[in-house]
Length: 185
Image (tube, rainbow, N blue to C red; front, top):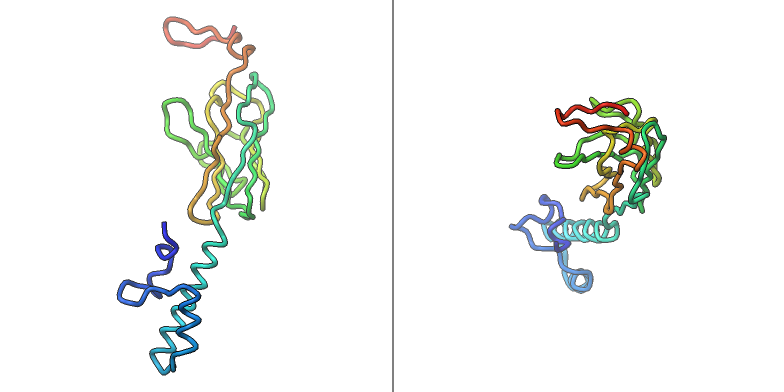
């Protein structure tokens, strides 16, 4: 996407002149005699240029999540961490995606549980560093976990994400019966 695509519509709408690059702007400002509308247009162009420069310098927020794979047994305490390369305040969310399902929001605002999120899921953090803890892992916690910042656009999500697996001990503790019920061994 070109930087001009990010410029606010008000200042640089299609019926106005596109903002020139810095070299052209410097040449025009020295040569032109500014009166009335000319001053306003130059001011709008300068403002557009500042917005473009700021957006280009800001860049996308990158997230790093660890571990990539997490094996746990029933009842374990596990923690997943997420680190942002820029400060995001408390604008962090956590999602869980179970096999063959859409991602489900677990946590928003860094530590608030979404409706239906079990109390064993606890999250904390602010600024750069965040964590999601599961106090007492259950079989239904198997899936892929994502952290997502919602501090600035574009919204970014981690890749690779954390995948949870049943440990061999967890698999051995369940008997899968022909009727489709699960019974503890």
